[in-house]
Image (cartoon, rainbow over all chains, first blue to last red; front, side, top):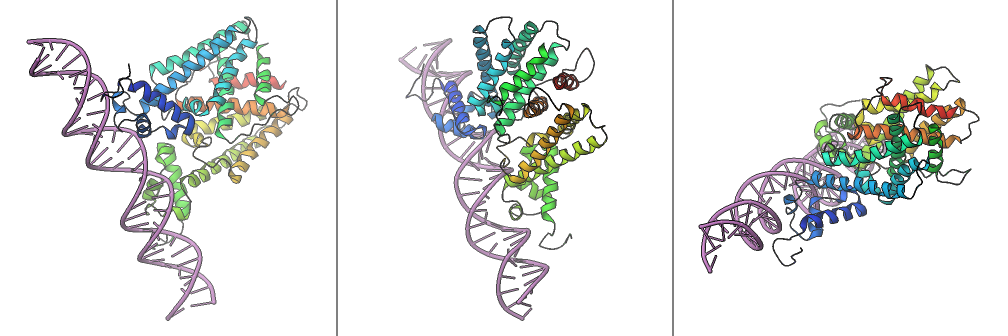
Length: 197
Length: 197
DNA sequence: TGTTCGATATTGACAGTGTCTATATTGACA
DNA sequence: TGTCAATATAGACACTGTCAATATCGAACA
């Protein structure tokens, strides 16, 4: 597909995407500028407009892809987890936290409603799939819970997101559990999962 | 203090701060540029440097002030709440959520570690006071809980922050509780507070 | 084969930004 | 009155996103 020595690049859209993700990982979202991406890809500063309408479109595409990656992470982790176990709910939290700490700048982009198009159907669909997956597992873990399923789902996702976001913001020190020695988020999840009983 | 017709403004630092907060409320943090603040205050684009070293210093000062406002909100609400009641823990969550929805852009600034100096001692001190206040109330509500106090505190703050942040990001619809008719966050808090028993 | 045309890339421009430097103004104090 | 530190200004620089005008290419069609 690549046509190295030609005026037309041939695979520029993919290259732009990859370069942008690389810049995101290295320098955070402020490092992902249209011009920097173009420079890194070896094209002129306004070549990208043919593939991504503007910066927002590029960042939205990246965010969507990350939600899809997270969903895959969850699904593949669930395959290794016995059914009808409370652990399966924890898989959601673990995958989210793991991704957040591994790719902090990507994670933070997911919730930057000022930078991405948070009404993009594909983006919302990718997020909804994760939410639905979470709800399924909550139903499986506690079919007849007193509180309704959506409350549990929103509460868990809120707690997980809030923890990651505060940690990544740099304002919250790790604060490991002195008694158990485990990272704080493990104790938090144990605490939360008692409500499923 | 103000000296209207003089070269030296006399109270510029305060004016810059107020203008910046106003721009923040109206247009979000991207609207708070040094030059826009200066324009609005009627001074040259490089006048602010005498009072705030750079944009980060200005935003850090604003963030710190907001943490102090939130602490005041919590303290004044606690005065109206009977001691030795579980409700007192809820006061923390209520104040945070109320502030978040009332001043969304201010709230979002609090956790923008890329824009503010998240190691600023005054900023951290303002945040720590809120955390300490929360811990006090948790101890009061459940003196001998099985899980340790910090886990409960971090879990609750995470859940509250995560909920606000996701809602403000625009990617999470309100999703009110269909059964009770109450907003989701009320049901979430009820759910969470069962762990204090 | 030659031509047209849509897709793609380039160049240049514009208004905006943060921040730096050099310069000017001012009020207070010696 | 003169000096000096605090404060304000003006100008410059290197960035940014986005737009308009132009150039190049490849493929489809005559």
